[in-house]
Image (cartoon, rainbow, N blue to C red):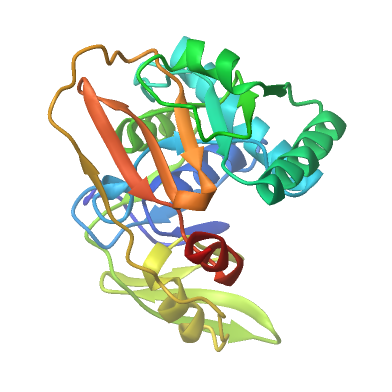
Length: 281
């Protein structure tokens, strides 16, 4: 990758994580040519992506967001079935667990949008949900939203699968390259200045993750984002846990989880003010 000739490209993608590589794959699949992806690290998927928990949940608060997530699942299925490098996709389903009447109402809205988008979901009684996760105590649970096509993958494997498939379609990748400037002319991108020279291009796609603000600033744009530190941990192996158990999310506890290495991967859902009020109450 380091020997890739830069020169020029129609599309320059800044950032070689799961998003950047996914964009490269999607553009190539759509028939776009002359795509160059730049990554500052010495390999793809080494920064934020390497720390990802790997969950893919499709029920969202709009039909458009649900359809986008459904496209992701369709892509993971395709790469798992046909690709040389696999994304390590596990379509185990997910349980979204409500501990309050307010959350039950919210889940009803998610189901409504899911129905409109054509995504299969079912509201389960706690007892029925317990059959899908026998080691979990559902005594306090009000309702559960079940989505059978949700699942999880290994983020590093996703990057490799995207990159291999995109590379076969002609996408170029250059690692150990820093973006130092973005030149514009008449309101349009003209070139990208890098640590390895200037690249003439027509479009720049900012997939720089936590550094996306700084890349946008190089083009004179104020991107209204703030990186937020996120953490999860993995427990020691627990008897009775297997890789086919569903993922789960408990909004009131700001908690998500899935099985990993016969233990539990547990992390915190990003919490807005509404969520904090639910937790405090």
